[in-house]
Image 1 (cartoon, helix red, strand yellow):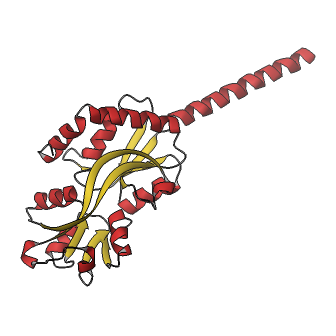
Image 2 (cartoon, one colour):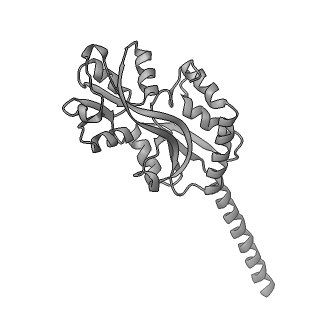
Image 3 (cartoon, helix red, strand yellow):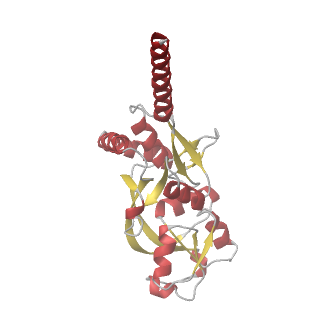
Length: 249
């Protein structure tokens, strides 16, 4: 009887060990989700129906040598930002790293250095040279965007769209007077639509990052940061930029 009980105990322990190993293995294999938005040239859906863009390609190249499954999902920005901030296992890019956002996430980057600027249609002859001079104008940005938040904090009323690229249509249809965004975004969206924009002024320099929920293992993020730095030092950033934009600047 005692021998039988011993066998049962050994069998139970073996079952428990295998179950725990299987659970741990499943947890290790669970993919991290990298959320992004339609934000050309940094992220967008290409002609093949795949998520593409400067930031996307940089991250994909950095991930290629790291043994951890990652999936990319493109959704509206407000959802992408909320998923990464509130749900374990998620990240979001391309995210401006601001003082307000700093404690919310773990950060990998920078992916791209950029600027924040104000744009208008040349035929409107708007002569604003500062955020102060935008007061009283209809200024367009998009929900949960760092540029929109920054401009609003400077006393400018902002009319937000669901995504940044919608602002070109709102500009050409007369729904807004000025669009505040990054030069890469403005030039890409306007160039694709055959619309000429005028840059009124630049009001801040910025860097965009991958922002990750605090649950993401630091070891993975350290690997990703190291590999991203290597990819950029190898000259791949300029090559990718040239592939996407057609220039190396």
